[in-house]
Image 1 (cartoon, rainbow, N blue to C red):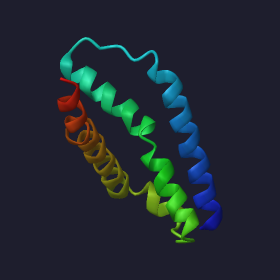
Image 2 (image 1 turned 120 degrees about the horizontal axis):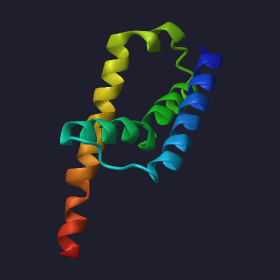
Image 3 (image 1 turned 135 degrees about the horizontal axis):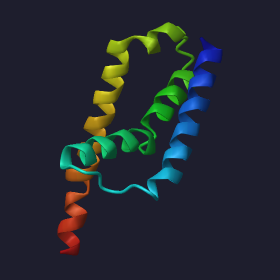
Length: 102
């Protein structure tokens, strides 16, 4: 619903801002797997894609029922989509810039 989209946008924007603040303290963990998992968890929120998804839903008046976003499959699809964007940005989009500075 329209109100649901507003609430989701507000929630995801708060998560984004909190994650930005918390990213200052991000430190490597005990193992590489834990470090990568922790990095991806905090990057999901600092990347602001969830806030963007909610904004697009709101702006286009999509009227998506709230329970759709609680479905585990939808939640996993959101996570996978964000992780792909993070990896693209981190390793592909920034590569030309790195090559220019080396």
